[in-house]
Image (cartoon, rainbow, N blue to C red; front, side, top):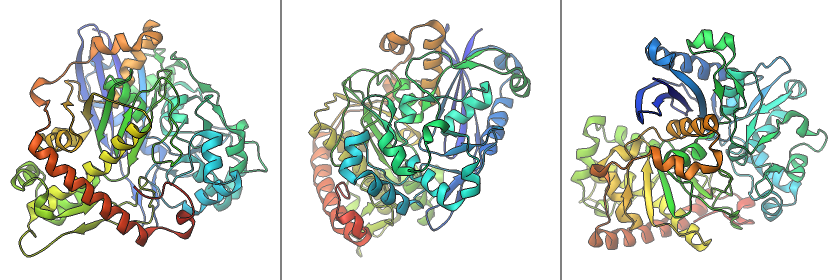
Length: 506
């Protein structure tokens, strides 16, 4: 037996997948939880050593036989995190994550230095939004100048795992496009944006070369192989951001497919053969990890919203499905705007969650809980509309993430989007995509990714569903009401700076 090891470094856990590519079956899946350090001021951090401890913990759950069957490794990771290293390869500060919204002022400062919102989009394809790596570097410079002076390398979370495994510092174009300082058209670092972060230091000296070809970046170090009980010297591919690896894992490597991920955050993205740049900044202009582009919408509140509301209404996780199924479509008029962690789309980092429409007849746990499901889905539906306005059309949705385990939520997605929903047998998403990327690199098939993906993914027919015309009409009305509510409530959480630039609301 020969397997590919796919690793996915998430926010709440780290997952490992062992995939037997000859038998075309997943041999083992294990995970380990991760802590998250959060503050009321928007700080969201983890320590890099927690990731390595979780990797060791997850791998220890697999048998020695399975671990020794690994012939290649691919790594997926949460995007936008900032991992600064000194010359000795030590991490200089806790890692600010994608969901950290504490650098709002630094976002504004970087964009002003670059010439404004429109100049950022013209120069690199994206504005600097809360969560992107660029503002975290500016914060580090101002908050910890002594440590900043010792910074030798800038890495992203999945890059750091690669660095631990191989000793090689590398960035991959898909993940790098989420920094805010990669020109997504050329896949090269933007001098404009780097100078806006720090005009006195050439940050290119801290940045690895951007990897654009799918080939191994190195091999597993003998010392690390011993720690993890893996074969030494196995090749490690470039890997990528969780969205880019999720695209591979859901077969989203050709135009026409729309991936919707119902995870801690919600994401919606499609493949394009040309750069897709949104002048409003609502759709992130990202590169894919397969040589194309991956226009993407990200919401910061998806399953986190349903979990918060579930606890609020004192519903056990085992009762979640029956509760949301007990409420009718539209939740009897209850509506949740799921901005509990602030929000990126719309760009409202100061926002709070809002529940509207409660009255004496509908204030019931089931309605409030289902409204959280519907609100998170409406937030993603905006991305479909905006992609269509930008010329991107899709004929099916591939649904992934923890929320996809709910039959009711799957049907809500089909009805809200008025599109057929496909769920795959391979449920590991980004980890499975990382494994397939490593397999392509191992076999020299990086130019034939669509064929390779089609050979290794399979629909789960029992969990696929189609939209119901009567429900589509109900949800169109609900979505219009949701959009109006977002526009109204945005005024409470929009800063003067945001009011003077685009992309601040749906």
